[in-house]
Length: 385
Length: 208
Image (cartoon, rainbow over all chains, first blue to last red; front, side, top):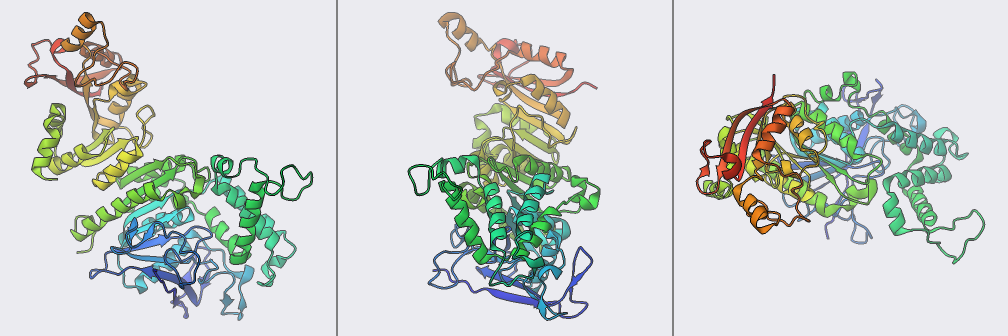
């Protein structure tokens, strides 16, 4: 059994060490929760950073204790002998800034007041998350990552890394993601946050963590969960099946299997996720537009980017549809960046990045192996000597 | 890949070694329908080209990635939105034109995104095919047409004369043409290519 111990990296106690944010505020006494798996090689060239999605955490693979029922969220993909093989690569995954699974976020104590930030937490961006991660990578003594890999919001962080730290990454694997978050996604995030904020228990974000705005947060999660699936998966998994009865109950309590499933997903989410954090992270996703700094010109955004890319989308993903991946590919190619792109046929919708392990794994595995070979033989542009 | 493997790879395909000879070292190449990417890898090792493959099958894309050949997914009946005019020194289309739904649009596209396009074209006017149609009364099959009429991916078969006509109509200039015969590879131009060449490698560009 692969046992992993979570670790913390703390920084930013003083003014010059504080983390500067896009909103021009500063964060002091920042903690990043992270986990590592595998061994860093002698020339520190085999480090792979995994970026988690909205509701993920640092626990990407393995178990914390022998009693754990489930391994980390991407255990099928990351581990000894897996596509992202921890026998070859040193894998790092950190909980994002603004998260609620060990890293500094709205639930953390504001050193200025001694009380939880709650809604006084500054509004953060994807670039802020990446800026914090860069501190962690520096702390680990890694000057150049072999690759940054991530799906969904994780893919946004991957792209941000390539633009903000072009000399610090050899290869990028953005999966089921976009370079510019769409109006549709902003709309879904808005409705989710409205559900949370209008829950009477929300109290401007100052709710008791023991008594959170569960109704609002579970509604937000149910809505979001629908966007992660597809018509095909829902049809196959639930169809028009009723959960308990053989006939309609003729009332408005849950009747259908799909309703029961969503209710279960919503309830489980409330147990592990913070409502304020959900608001902050979805806002960071809303603000994500890599062409923001270049007046809407996405190709110009990648002007200083280096390294190579493997872009993957999934045919039934309607949250981050293939046309967005193609727009990204076009921008990369316009800068003559070495680019690979595949749309994988899948019925799983957006969640496919967690489920299509065989097809995705073959591509990611080969891509990383080639990159490591190139970096080791010094072939890649700007590689470490 | 060792030199021996490369030799084996191009051995059965005179058109591929011909295409390789046409490409300037250090140029940029887009290979349409690049399959497992071995030809691009061969070009990279021989000519140090900056390459990109276009392929539709996810399985073959995975092979390209394993072979270290940059590849993007795309189908040949869509406009190549990913490329600007003249983005590539060469666009290679090897024995694929007959498989697409709109060969005429594809021709326009390849001379748009490539400064030059290299097309290897299967000649339906080849004497063996004419014989089969004329004497056996059957749709031709053979080494380069290994399908039955009902399951063939080759949906737009034409002759070299047809191809010349189409290029003229689309304002595409034929820079050079190398007809390929059965026995000796490259066929001398005087011996009726439209009858005796099973295929032909054309270099094309947009009329100025």
